[in-house]
Image (cartoon, rainbow, N blue to C red; front, side):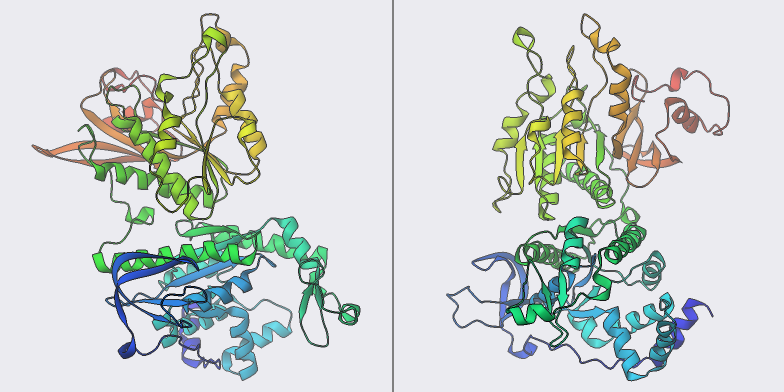
Length: 592
């Protein structure tokens, strides 16, 4: 039987015997209305953004007191329940965070383990089918579990209040089944905890066979020596079995990461539960706000490559419009987030629009700084501590100096507007390039246009920094790491091969370059774009009418094409045709 037919037959027979979640909101007729959208960042501060919503205090006794308040937020003008998936390894604290999420946001908590136990206990048809596999020591097939989940999601309480899907999907096939049924969360939260911490949490857990209560010898010790004496270790909490479970979790998590890469948000779970939830709450509140904004504006936010709008036109018009700048900021951000969420740690962004091309007289340092700010604030919103790094002076004595492109950039970063949420100095800090700049508290590093200067090389400092950073992401924005020889030729001869190998070790997560005739910067002939994890795309600019243009895709490439491959695509030559001199169709020298 095909999975789809099994799903339909099972749906008609499922009768879930679970208690409906209690709604904490009073009837809409009694709800007080307000013209503000309410979100909590802490128990002592309220932030209001103009939107039409209604809210109801659950424990408020006085409007002047904030301690102990708990608010549920619903949209008055739109019905946009929040849909959340949460994933975490064994002992990551996922259960605790689920309880806090349900308490705060009122979502319907759906766990496949609970669903299976309810069906087996009730003796339903699907429960009996699942029991056969469980008794045989086999995993319950995906189609049965998916049928249970989709049926539970279709119930009225999940539709009205939103849902929290706990630990599901666990495989690529399960994720694909949900995608085919158009079941997709607004945000996919991953609790990230180091393996050694997870193992310690598991093997330190002890079970009281009398009360069924779980203790931890370090973190949550038993109240009395009598209780401690009767504690036992659960069969699946041995170090060997814990490591096996972690390996299985990692394999499953990797298999579904591509499905949810553009909505995946990793949260550092190696902190007290209150701090972890503060980040989780911020993510869910942001997702809720985006849903409201989309519903009220009717314009969906740019979330994935499928909804990419294409290359903007009039890119030679200087200065660029705010819309064009924001377009590229968002394009770079989406690609970089996908790469970081996929576990990539050595990344580079190369974007060469006129305002970001230092070879043009229209180069604008402010555009580069704004791009860096967008990236840093976005990752800070995800709970990451970001260090933005600008290289300092190189050389000694009379030869000391730094590339002209970077002159004054650190001061610009320090005086920029980083918002009034207190990100600068807490989640975002500014530093230099070098091993000493890497602190234990830093989660990732954004390096602003690292580059060699004549006779001086930044790569040694860069390599030392990445060695200390380990597996933490290091992102280079518009690096220029080619050797620039001094009068002695020292950069041409000493260690050049090793430097080139190291520079090439950074994986491109975003690439955009306009293409011109060789030696010119007008008119634009086309563009080459790559956004992780997709292919390189070659576009040709076409004049449709006076004052009207568009970009038409000519070809795609799995790797960055060279100039001959680009020329051949423009000339319509087959890929396997012998290469000839570039001639008239040669593009800007040194680009590739």
